[in-house]
Image (cartoon, rainbow, N blue to C red; front, side, top):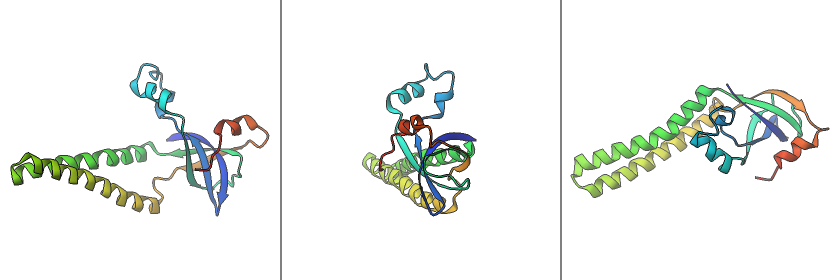
Length: 159
C-alpha cells in the first residue's frame, strides 16, 4: 500500500476533500539524492492536490488523515496511461508503412494511433471513476485544530 497524509479542507455529502502535497514515492528512498527522479522532485515537486475521498472516519475540516491506495492499482494505471498511446503510435506507424508504403502515411497513422490511445484512456478513466476501484481510502485521522503549523504548511487554495 502507498500511504499519504493530507488535510481535510471540506466535507460534502460524506465525501471529504483532502489536500495532499505532491511528492513522489522516491522521496522516502535512500538513493533519492543520486537518482534523476529524486533530483527532479526537489526542483519541480511540491504542488497541491485535492482528492475526493469517502469520509469513512467521520473526519472534519482541519483534521489530518492518512489515505492509502494499493501499489498494484497505481502500477496498473501507470502501465495503461503510458502503454496505450505508445502502442497506438507503433501500430499506426507500422500500419501506415505496410498499407501505403510511404513515410508520410506512417507519420499520419502514427499520430492518429497516438491520439486514439489518449481517447481510449479518457473513456477508460470515466469508467474507472464510477467503479471507485482506483480511489484512495481513508485509513486514519488525527485532529489538528490546535496545531496551526501543519495547517499553514498546506496553504490551502481554491483550486
